[in-house]
Length: 449
Ligand SMILES: Cc1cc2nc3c(=O)[nH]c(=O)nc-3n(C[C@H](O)[C@H](O)[C@H](O)COP(=O)(O)OP(=O)(O)OC[C@H]3O[C@@H](n4cnc5c(N)ncnc54)[C@H](O)[C@@H]3O)c2cc1C
Image 1 (cartoon, protein in one colour):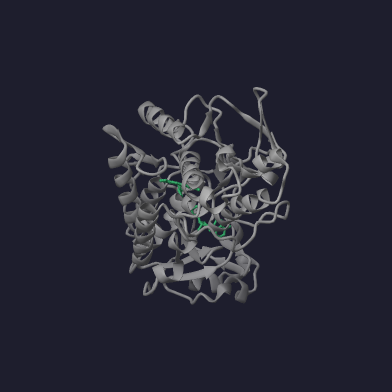
Image 2 (cartoon, helix red, strand yellow; image 1 turned 120 degrees about the horizontal axis):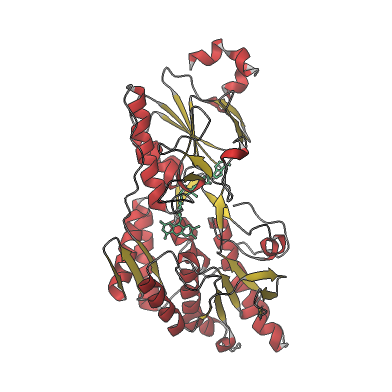
């Protein structure tokens, strides 16, 4: 990093600022990775023991295993079983420095990253900041609806459902009681379907025991979807199987129904229906979560950063984007790849190879996605799995779903915790994490994700 000292005037920054964050000088290129999600983690690990200095910046000091967030939201798992400390993951990786900070923006001209604890010069920057919930500009929905992109948000949902039940006990107004018990989930992708299944298990096995004074049979769980089928990104067979499973769990599924507004109690749809519920979970849209400083011209309509087939940000030297925040647009993927963990992991692994190839003067390899399939679970004993060459469902699919998730979890302790919890929950029909540890405050300013 010596060149930054001699070129200090180029940055117009005092030396101590450019070297802020207490990152030591090194004689190898500095790669700043923003975000320790699936993509950031894979990239940083793949560059272990290589001739680069890695600075990983994340606003959380842990990695979140998002596919199991819905189990935290429904009291099936403790939050610490799906979060893993980043410092533990990188213990012993000598070429990596982690700093806990939120990056506000980058300056691609000066090659500097700006964060809440200072700024840092880079040789290469990799934006791996993932995605955010997309309310499509509907501020009322955003204010009253619950989103589930992070552990704090999943805990908010858990608290809200339980708080509403506590409140339902106190009212003698039957309509209000039902409104407090009802749950609406908007968006029937994997997250919405999995949530609906898990909440229906709560309704069947837990809530009647915890609240014998309430007629829990009057609680409705509605899954509202704008398109004609659930799990629309999966095969038609999987959609049909999932719909059947949801209906057998007494989840009311409303297809071809677009939610227009929600005031905290009443949901209105475009086709003129109204539903009443004091919990609405929004899983109907995602958008990229880029940092500022990227030219608006390279941002797609849903805020993803357009990259070429090597994950290079178009028009910016030394800057890359990987995972959910990136949109690699080609003929097969006119809106970029699906925002799923495998794309993030595979893009990051390819980028690591290309960074190393480039340092040796070799040609980079274009990214090619290897589709390993997709799956979703619908309550106990049921799942659907689409593989590139086939589809299966039922108990076997559910076991496969569990195994895949346990294998992908980060950290041995987390794998054991999840397996023990799942076994306990299965045998005992239990949800022992149903604690209101951090009460959710309606109408309070939303906690950041
Ligand atoms: C509820 C839910 C369920 C899902 N289920 C599945 C599933 O079953 N299968 C599947 O394949 N995919 C699933 N996904 C999608 C999958 O989790 C994402 O595709 C994957 O996490 C993308 O990885 P990423 O590294 O791009 O982003 P992320 O994993 O989101 O990581 C982004 C990281 O960047 C950090 N960050 C963001 N902004 C800043 C900033 N300004 N400064 C510092 N740090 C920042 C965040 O703290 C985070 O650690 C699910 C997602 C959700 C939300």
